[in-house]
Length: 285
Image 1 (tube, rainbow, N blue to C red):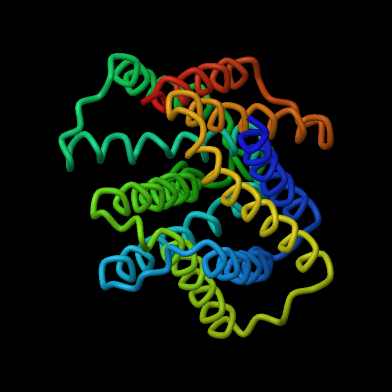
Image 2: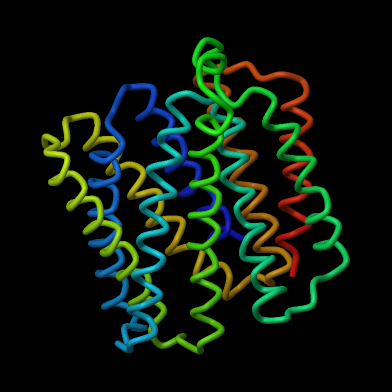
């Protein structure tokens, strides 16, 4: 159970670093550049220490797709945090787990459990409740069309959902011997995309706080990934996935509320509560 808790704490650290970065005016690309450099180096060390680095064509392709999706999703997430309320944004982010569940049903013909079906049915209601005010800046909300407000959310949810599906495909294509290589590759491809984007846009190197928060979120994801892998091998899936999904969201919302005291409407509070229930239902296997 200690490994499970450490995995949740790692995720919370990364989320708090994201919020602090946006509040400090850090640039998105520079933050992510530092973060992905840290995670790439970290997972290379873990891979060579624990094995699972077998090279094949399938894992390279999956790493490329996952890396590009992660790049899009995290840039969109940090963009959302600049104009949105952290509790709502992080709830939207966690709702991306709906996508791998739906793809598992339609692509691999997995039969969903009754509680998963109930969770999927409740998803539209969650989005309606959470979407009452997507941004904390009312003037920004009124001056920009609906599509411009929702576009980063769609990019984040879709990108994160496809990224998560790639983990499922590692199992589907029996790439267990390449599992740690996959972790290295998607981080490496994300890092390459960030480097190319910053060079094309002629961005200046990261500043002090971008190094600080980028390193902090990178460390958080290394902790979450490392101890999450250990925990999922020791704890039943019916315990691991609901606890990690709901636990990390609840702890993130609690910590960000304590630090930044962001106010959300009663409708959004109901939406967050319903989303936690949905996440638990869908995560149960």
